[in-house]
Amino acid sequence: MSRPPKYRGSPYGAKDPENLDNILSELFHLRGYNRFKANEQLQEMWDQVAEEFSHAAMKVKGIKNGVLEITLSNSALLYQLDSFYKSEFLHTIQTEYKHLKVREIKFRLKGNLNK
Image (tube, rainbow, N blue to C red; front, top):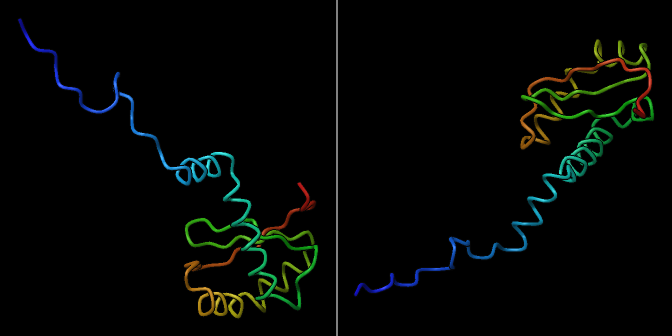
């Protein structure tokens, strides 16, 4: 008569329970809450960098591949920022916010920033 196999871990291949912090972090990631918080922090950073221009006509869209994208609802403001202040803003971000690894800033015109 053969012996039954030794018991090794949970029956039916079940895994050990996961930590609650891992589950919550995955849930936040899946629901997009991390992105929302990150965009809030980017907006706060931009408000500090461009404080004299900071108002409702500008919104930070995000960082992708080292490019910080700012959407504007005013074409005159877009031209002014892109032509005269872009290099100053980029230098400030690269020195004070090194962890963001921003290598370029792009300004985009968008009519309604609330969408």
